[in-house]
Length: 98
Image 1 (cartoon, rainbow, N blue to C red):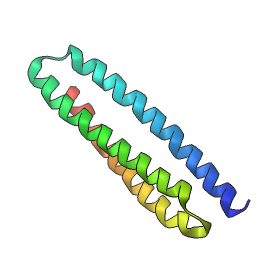
Image 2 (image 1 turned 135 degrees about the horizontal axis):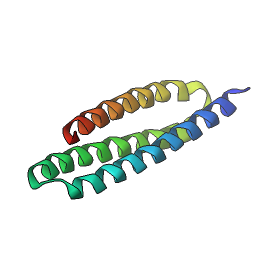
Image 3 (image 1 turned 90 degrees about the vertical axis):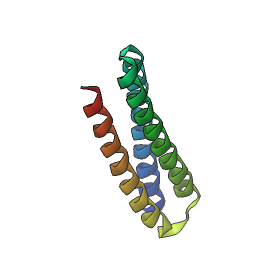
Image 4 (image 1 turned 30 degrees about the vertical axis):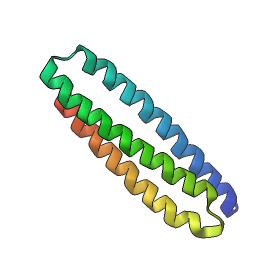
């Protein structure tokens, strides 16, 4: 498998994960609408933070698409780090909802 194929597989994997995060954020928004006012405010803040992180990932993915050769490896490290950051923010939001 050449570098371009590996990059494409990685790109598709991240796009699928971003779609999944979008669905999770939508579910959290639906739950927030049913929460009391104080909790809703906290959840709305978390939702905005999650959306921002997701959009950051989408921007990094655009960089990955434009990268050439082996440069995509360094970009993928940043994407992996941002993905972990998004997961951490998700866990924090889930804890506030419980």
